[in-house]
Image (tube, rainbow, N blue to C red; front, side, top):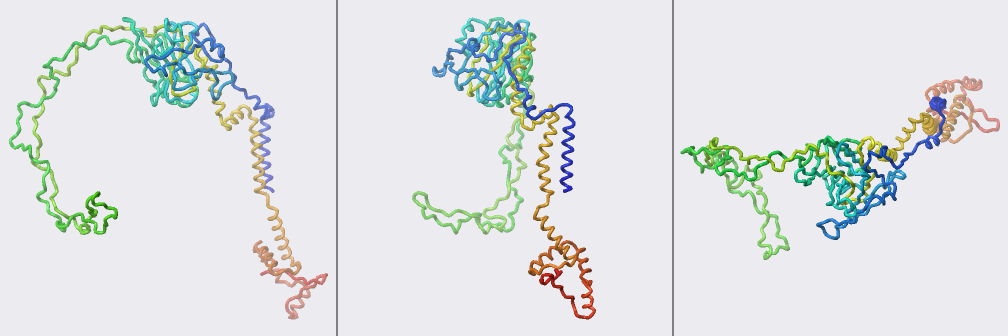
Length: 582
């Protein structure tokens, strides 16, 4: 009982202390806490400064999307008619999971089909003195097997006026975004540079990212891709606001923007007497007279002696005498049957059997094929290279940032994965606008994903930090089963209590020599055995009492020599006797 009281008092004190600590500050219930947890609310974003925005699309307005975006009706050149059409299906819909209410995206629904869709910018972007910030989201809902999720900034011109004919050959200025096939993971940044001399266009490919990007293709999470292109020819590429690549348009692209000032003369040829050999055999060297080219590299050791006990007349292997020709052996088909060979038992204890030959050793007279020594070539002129001439196509463009004006944006893709979602595209000249756009869209998506994936323990911890009074609730909830368990552990069972009480009564009767009814001998023995386990102290006390006469009559009987005292009859005439100790 003392154990239960102490545990109960301890838990009550802790609970009261926790409740008292926050009682004056706030009074809330679990239901109130759950109701006050705010959901992540989404509203279609609006650029903070539309004058600095050239394109902004959130895909939340289906009617606006249908007016703005144009699905290509063109065909690819140079391939079979069956697969030449751009018949990939585009839809505007929510993401498959973790979607915010009201948030939609552009989804490429089909795989293994060519798909193209595009839209005109709100106003053309001219590469002059303002930076270009291109930002959009990609969600590979089924991962990516092989295919791209990049977009193109289409060049201004006659070929981009009618976007119904948008195809792979449509001129573009910049291509940017993720691409993967097999184990080849890419984050494209390609721009087409115009040759200032002849006006030709050439693709310039950015160096590989400095950070790992493999996980972006497999984690099935939305990712934010950002390209910042500055008028000083520097660029930055970020994924989820983390810098993964940076550099210069003049230094970090292949092929380089500016060609070399000099090139090898294509008409220059190596002279016939040009000797590129740095070393030559000594023409004046002669082979020594004692040089034997025919001497073998190894010879028998003439000093070797056959080991004692070597059995020269015994073969190392003999036919197995226990072998039996198979019953299905066909001599005409299989040839004459011969028993298999086994090791000769006679050779087991001998150092060897059969013909003995001395071991081979290196031939001290061996010199090998004679060759004259090598000497410096007096006619050596070095490695021949064609002479350099001025590059007739050389130019030095110090401002590759000044690219072809962009007037439209488009996706022209082929993928072996379906349900690729694109969302929240923005082209601006101010990074703060792009950051605010991402905060209103991408950041909320990731918050929603983090909230939905949060475990029960994490949620309880977050609520407890906000509402400390919940500690008291947790303690009370946990205290109930703990108190119950401790109560069961400390509470004695009813059968054990009854048995203990019976044993105590029996022991008391034995101590006072109280008369008991005559019962069966085996029942008396059971009681006596149980009482005997109460300790040696009871036995000693009983021995003292048993050694004394019980009454004056007993004393007289003992003094007169009549033997043991007699038992007195009971009031009802039943004979009584004392429980005796074994």
